[in-house]
Image 1 (cartoon, one colour):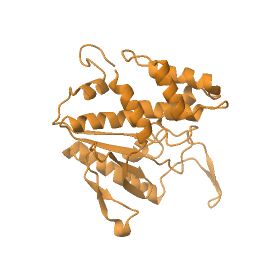
Image 2: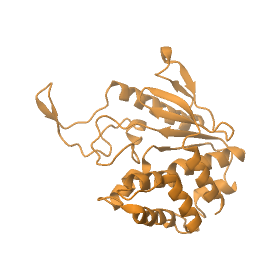
Image 3: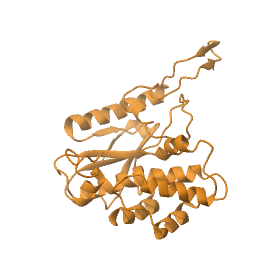
Image 4: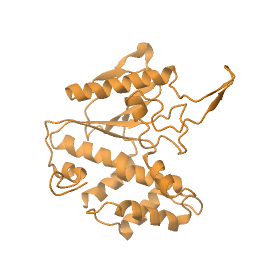
Length: 254
Protein backbone atom coordinates (compact mmCIF):
# COMPACT_ATOMS: atom_id res chain seq x y z
CA UNK A 1 0.00 0.00 0.00
CA UNK A 2 1.28 3.47 -0.89
CA UNK A 3 1.54 5.26 2.47
CA UNK A 4 3.58 8.32 1.49
CA UNK A 5 6.23 7.40 4.07
CA UNK A 6 7.87 4.04 3.36
CA UNK A 7 6.14 3.29 0.05
CA UNK A 8 5.93 6.43 -2.05
CA UNK A 9 4.47 4.91 -5.20
CA UNK A 10 3.31 1.61 -6.63
CA UNK A 11 6.26 -0.75 -7.24
CA UNK A 12 5.22 -1.19 -10.88
CA UNK A 13 5.30 2.57 -11.36
CA UNK A 14 8.79 2.66 -9.89
CA UNK A 15 9.98 -0.16 -12.15
CA UNK A 16 8.57 1.37 -15.33
CA UNK A 17 10.09 4.74 -14.47
CA UNK A 18 13.51 3.28 -13.63
CA UNK A 19 13.34 4.19 -9.97
CA UNK A 20 14.88 1.01 -8.52
CA UNK A 21 18.26 -0.30 -7.39
CA UNK A 22 19.78 -2.13 -10.40
CA UNK A 23 22.11 -4.06 -8.10
CA UNK A 24 19.21 -5.96 -6.51
CA UNK A 25 17.89 -8.73 -8.81
CA UNK A 26 14.22 -9.63 -9.05
CA UNK A 27 12.46 -12.99 -9.40
CA UNK A 28 8.96 -12.39 -10.77
CA UNK A 29 6.27 -14.36 -12.56
CA UNK A 30 2.70 -15.57 -12.61
CA UNK A 31 0.45 -18.61 -12.57
CA UNK A 32 -1.65 -19.58 -15.59
CA UNK A 33 -5.01 -18.78 -13.99
CA UNK A 34 -4.23 -16.16 -11.34
CA UNK A 35 -7.50 -14.34 -11.93
CA UNK A 36 -9.82 -17.33 -11.46
CA UNK A 37 -9.71 -17.10 -7.66
CA UNK A 38 -10.65 -13.41 -7.57
CA UNK A 39 -13.43 -13.69 -10.14
CA UNK A 40 -14.86 -16.70 -8.29
CA UNK A 41 -14.77 -14.86 -4.96
CA UNK A 42 -16.75 -11.93 -6.29
CA UNK A 43 -19.00 -13.67 -8.82
CA UNK A 44 -19.80 -17.17 -7.64
CA UNK A 45 -22.62 -17.58 -10.13
CA UNK A 46 -20.69 -16.28 -13.12
CA UNK A 47 -20.28 -13.15 -15.25
CA UNK A 48 -22.92 -13.08 -17.96
CA UNK A 49 -23.03 -11.29 -21.28
CA UNK A 50 -20.88 -8.56 -22.76
CA UNK A 51 -22.28 -6.06 -20.26
CA UNK A 52 -21.13 -8.27 -17.39
CA UNK A 53 -17.68 -8.63 -18.93
CA UNK A 54 -17.38 -4.86 -19.44
CA UNK A 55 -18.52 -4.08 -15.90
CA UNK A 56 -16.01 -6.43 -14.31
CA UNK A 57 -13.26 -5.29 -16.67
CA UNK A 58 -13.91 -1.72 -15.54
CA UNK A 59 -13.84 -2.81 -11.90
CA UNK A 60 -10.55 -4.63 -12.48
CA UNK A 61 -8.85 -1.65 -14.09
CA UNK A 62 -10.26 0.89 -11.68
CA UNK A 63 -9.59 -1.04 -8.46
CA UNK A 64 -6.25 0.55 -7.65
CA UNK A 65 -6.32 4.16 -6.55
CA UNK A 66 -3.86 6.34 -8.40
CA UNK A 67 -4.02 4.48 -11.71
CA UNK A 68 -5.80 6.06 -14.69
CA UNK A 69 -9.29 4.77 -15.32
CA UNK A 70 -10.33 2.74 -18.32
CA UNK A 71 -11.66 4.42 -21.43
CA UNK A 72 -13.84 3.38 -24.36
CA UNK A 73 -10.91 2.79 -26.73
CA UNK A 74 -9.10 0.58 -24.26
CA UNK A 75 -12.24 -1.40 -23.49
CA UNK A 76 -13.04 -1.91 -27.17
CA UNK A 77 -9.57 -3.32 -27.77
CA UNK A 78 -9.92 -5.58 -24.73
CA UNK A 79 -13.24 -6.87 -26.05
CA UNK A 80 -11.59 -7.72 -29.37
CA UNK A 81 -8.82 -9.63 -27.60
CA UNK A 82 -10.87 -11.51 -25.01
CA UNK A 83 -14.06 -11.90 -27.10
CA UNK A 84 -16.80 -12.01 -24.45
CA UNK A 85 -19.94 -13.90 -25.41
CA UNK A 86 -23.56 -13.85 -24.40
CA UNK A 87 -23.19 -16.58 -21.77
CA UNK A 88 -20.86 -16.92 -18.80
CA UNK A 89 -17.67 -14.89 -19.29
CA UNK A 90 -16.10 -15.69 -15.90
CA UNK A 91 -13.19 -17.47 -17.59
CA UNK A 92 -12.55 -14.58 -19.96
CA UNK A 93 -12.69 -12.05 -17.15
CA UNK A 94 -10.26 -14.27 -15.23
CA UNK A 95 -7.83 -14.20 -18.18
CA UNK A 96 -8.31 -10.43 -18.40
CA UNK A 97 -7.40 -10.02 -14.73
CA UNK A 98 -4.55 -12.54 -14.98
CA UNK A 99 -2.96 -10.69 -17.88
CA UNK A 100 -3.47 -7.15 -16.63
CA UNK A 101 -2.35 -7.74 -13.07
CA UNK A 102 -0.02 -10.74 -13.16
CA UNK A 103 1.29 -12.23 -16.43
CA UNK A 104 1.70 -9.06 -18.47
CA UNK A 105 2.41 -6.92 -15.44
CA UNK A 106 5.27 -9.25 -14.53
CA UNK A 107 6.63 -9.15 -18.07
CA UNK A 108 6.45 -5.35 -18.16
CA UNK A 109 8.36 -5.05 -14.88
CA UNK A 110 10.99 -7.60 -15.97
CA UNK A 111 11.34 -5.83 -19.31
CA UNK A 112 11.81 -2.41 -17.75
CA UNK A 113 14.34 -3.66 -15.21
CA UNK A 114 16.29 -5.48 -17.92
CA UNK A 115 16.33 -2.48 -20.24
CA UNK A 116 17.40 -0.12 -17.46
CA UNK A 117 20.41 -2.11 -16.27
CA UNK A 118 18.95 -4.46 -13.69
CA UNK A 119 18.49 -8.24 -13.60
CA UNK A 120 15.15 -10.04 -13.57
CA UNK A 121 14.19 -13.71 -13.78
CA UNK A 122 10.72 -14.32 -15.22
CA UNK A 123 8.67 -17.50 -14.76
CA UNK A 124 5.30 -18.97 -15.73
CA UNK A 125 3.96 -21.57 -13.30
CA UNK A 126 1.59 -23.96 -15.02
CA UNK A 127 0.65 -26.93 -12.84
CA UNK A 128 -2.15 -27.82 -10.43
CA UNK A 129 -1.40 -30.73 -8.08
CA UNK A 130 -3.40 -33.91 -8.38
CA UNK A 131 -4.56 -33.61 -4.78
CA UNK A 132 -6.10 -30.15 -4.71
CA UNK A 133 -9.71 -29.56 -3.71
CA UNK A 134 -9.80 -25.74 -3.79
CA UNK A 135 -13.07 -24.98 -5.63
CA UNK A 136 -11.48 -22.74 -8.25
CA UNK A 137 -10.57 -23.62 -11.82
CA UNK A 138 -7.04 -23.90 -13.15
CA UNK A 139 -3.65 -22.96 -11.75
CA UNK A 140 -5.01 -20.31 -9.43
CA UNK A 141 -3.34 -17.52 -7.47
CA UNK A 142 -0.96 -18.92 -4.80
CA UNK A 143 -0.95 -22.48 -6.22
CA UNK A 144 2.84 -22.33 -6.60
CA UNK A 145 3.38 -21.87 -2.85
CA UNK A 146 2.67 -25.54 -2.20
CA UNK A 147 5.74 -26.39 -4.25
CA UNK A 148 8.05 -23.56 -3.23
CA UNK A 149 7.58 -24.41 0.46
CA UNK A 150 7.02 -28.17 0.09
CA UNK A 151 3.58 -27.91 1.70
CA UNK A 152 1.03 -29.89 -0.32
CA UNK A 153 -1.87 -29.07 2.02
CA UNK A 154 -1.43 -25.28 1.92
CA UNK A 155 -4.76 -23.71 0.97
CA UNK A 156 -6.60 -27.03 0.64
CA UNK A 157 -9.96 -27.76 2.19
CA UNK A 158 -8.82 -31.34 2.81
CA UNK A 159 -12.09 -32.95 1.76
CA UNK A 160 -11.82 -36.66 2.62
CA UNK A 161 -11.21 -38.95 -0.37
CA UNK A 162 -11.93 -42.66 -0.48
CA UNK A 163 -8.81 -44.76 -1.00
CA UNK A 164 -9.87 -47.90 -2.86
CA UNK A 165 -6.54 -49.59 -2.15
CA UNK A 166 -6.65 -49.21 1.63
CA UNK A 167 -10.44 -49.20 1.94
CA UNK A 168 -10.35 -46.05 4.05
CA UNK A 169 -11.14 -42.37 3.67
CA UNK A 170 -7.92 -40.35 3.29
CA UNK A 171 -7.88 -36.86 4.75
CA UNK A 172 -4.26 -36.03 4.01
CA UNK A 173 -3.18 -34.55 0.70
CA UNK A 174 0.36 -35.30 -0.40
CA UNK A 175 2.52 -34.92 -3.47
CA UNK A 176 3.05 -37.85 -5.80
CA UNK A 177 6.58 -38.73 -6.91
CA UNK A 178 6.75 -36.28 -9.82
CA UNK A 179 5.21 -33.50 -7.75
CA UNK A 180 7.73 -34.11 -5.01
CA UNK A 181 10.50 -33.68 -7.56
CA UNK A 182 8.97 -30.45 -8.84
CA UNK A 183 8.73 -29.13 -5.29
CA UNK A 184 12.40 -29.96 -4.70
CA UNK A 185 13.36 -28.15 -7.89
CA UNK A 186 11.33 -25.04 -7.13
CA UNK A 187 12.37 -24.84 -3.51
CA UNK A 188 15.99 -25.12 -4.62
CA UNK A 189 15.66 -22.39 -7.22
CA UNK A 190 13.93 -19.97 -4.85
CA UNK A 191 16.49 -20.68 -2.10
CA UNK A 192 19.43 -20.18 -4.48
CA UNK A 193 17.96 -16.90 -5.62
CA UNK A 194 17.55 -15.72 -2.02
CA UNK A 195 21.11 -16.72 -1.20
CA UNK A 196 22.95 -15.66 -4.35
CA UNK A 197 20.70 -13.45 -6.46
CA UNK A 198 20.50 -16.10 -9.19
CA UNK A 199 18.17 -19.11 -9.20
CA UNK A 200 20.79 -21.21 -11.00
CA UNK A 201 20.14 -24.22 -13.17
CA UNK A 202 17.66 -26.99 -12.56
CA UNK A 203 17.16 -30.42 -14.06
CA UNK A 204 14.93 -30.62 -17.09
CA UNK A 205 13.14 -33.84 -16.27
CA UNK A 206 11.70 -34.05 -19.76
CA UNK A 207 15.15 -34.12 -21.35
CA UNK A 208 17.19 -37.30 -21.82
CA UNK A 209 19.31 -37.99 -18.78
CA UNK A 210 17.76 -35.13 -16.81
CA UNK A 211 20.06 -32.54 -18.37
CA UNK A 212 20.28 -29.14 -16.71
CA UNK A 213 18.60 -26.05 -18.09
CA UNK A 214 19.81 -22.57 -17.15
CA UNK A 215 17.26 -20.01 -16.10
CA UNK A 216 18.48 -17.01 -18.06
CA UNK A 217 18.00 -13.42 -17.04
CA UNK A 218 15.08 -11.85 -18.80
CA UNK A 219 15.86 -10.00 -22.03
CA UNK A 220 13.42 -7.99 -24.13
CA UNK A 221 15.06 -9.35 -27.29
CA UNK A 222 14.29 -12.99 -26.52
CA UNK A 223 11.27 -12.47 -24.21
CA UNK A 224 11.90 -15.78 -22.45
CA UNK A 225 10.46 -17.06 -19.20
CA UNK A 226 10.99 -20.32 -17.36
CA UNK A 227 7.91 -22.48 -17.93
CA UNK A 228 7.40 -24.51 -14.76
CA UNK A 229 5.15 -27.55 -14.91
CA UNK A 230 5.25 -31.21 -13.94
CA UNK A 231 8.15 -33.08 -15.56
CA UNK A 232 8.87 -30.28 -17.99
CA UNK A 233 10.98 -27.25 -17.05
CA UNK A 234 11.66 -25.40 -20.27
CA UNK A 235 12.44 -21.98 -21.64
CA UNK A 236 9.25 -20.40 -22.99
CA UNK A 237 9.30 -17.52 -25.48
CA UNK A 238 6.65 -14.84 -26.03
CA UNK A 239 4.09 -16.13 -23.52
CA UNK A 240 0.74 -14.38 -24.24
CA UNK A 241 2.59 -11.90 -26.43
CA UNK A 242 -0.42 -10.34 -28.21
CA UNK A 243 -2.17 -9.74 -24.90
CA UNK A 244 0.93 -8.41 -23.17
CA UNK A 245 1.78 -6.09 -26.07
CA UNK A 246 -1.69 -4.59 -25.62
CA UNK A 247 -1.22 -4.19 -21.88
CA UNK A 248 2.27 -2.70 -22.37
CA UNK A 249 0.65 0.12 -24.32
CA UNK A 250 -1.78 0.62 -21.45
CA UNK A 251 0.97 0.65 -18.83
CA UNK A 252 3.05 3.10 -20.84
CA UNK A 253 0.10 5.48 -21.06
CA UNK A 254 -0.01 5.91 -17.28
